[in-house]
Length: 209
Length: 209
DNA sequence: AATCTATATATAAAAATTTATATATGTAAC
DNA sequence: GTTACATATATAAATTTTTATATATAGATT
Image (cartoon, rainbow over all chains, first blue to last red; front, side, top):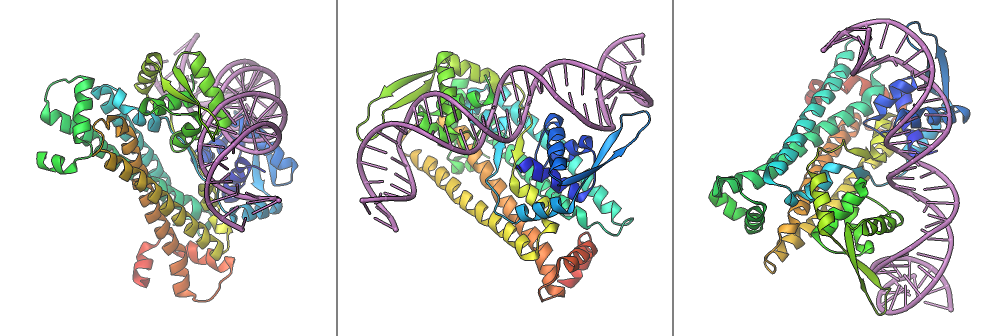
């Protein structure tokens, strides 16, 4: 079994769902397209790790509702208890920041601005999810299964907020300082020279502001 | 060109290096094994995006030092100025946290403890890198090329610190509250019942502590 | 003496992942 | 009325990525 399959088991251990629903839940956990998820479910099913029930629907396509078997659950428990492998983060934004000095100041500013927007929107969606869990607490008693997911939502919100703080820090660093000294459009060459003077002189920046 | 190739160009735009060195620099930017990087360098070279110089060495294998061409640099600039795609994070730790309620309390605690250790060690390495950049400022004038990398180091340190804060939050949540009420080894069933009672009642926790 | 680590590149094979295509239907927007 | 979107599953083809193997040498460790 690979990590995708363990991730599927983790989601199903919280709530039985269709392949279609699984795609959405996995987005934040172990992103995968449906073309990868459906074959994985077939494998898990053949291995006896999951069961499914065919649900007839009118108006929309029929679906299979999957749930973990005892075997699947115990495999998952065992895997969850061994050490984790290093995370692999693939984020184009990071590569673009690495090369940010090659951009014109307006492009650099818009790169940061887009990331702030991205983060804020994501935070809103995550907080909605958290709200739903908290709300359901009053209707249903056994919310135990939401524990891990709730912790992860809290984690992601914290990290996104911290990234937004960092974005403001970078933006202030790049644009405010340049604009203070040169309140006119400046060339890349000027920007480079200025940054090389100021980048690691926070004392200077403190004097300026 | 794919993102791996743009990432390679980004690293080379900062500093000419061998494929072997590239692997290490890409680890935090766009992780890839050498078996992926060497063919990518061949492609970039054939496309005229990078040049290389053969360096004869004694005692160790000869190497190729790659650098970006003008063409490579302008391609990179253009790519860096278009919107970024969504990040893809694959982190087994997150999957294990999602399923944390299935673990025995000691296993859950050790999962969190390992992540804190992981984060602290990573922070130490990153701070060393930052220190080197800051130190070199006094010897060399043109540190402009380190700008993006320095920003990313700062970002990662901030995020790791925030994750460590979150880890303590989770650990306190899970273990302290349980130990307070039941200072003896407890079963999974007890733990589940307790968590379902307390998880979303911070008021209760405040009364307890 | 043998093993491990670091330096250095290359490629084949296997596995994971993405992109594209197919099919089917209700509802909402334009 | 036509386009877009949400629901639902399936598979082929292309691409990306990992694992494994190959070769070569110096220095440190066991």
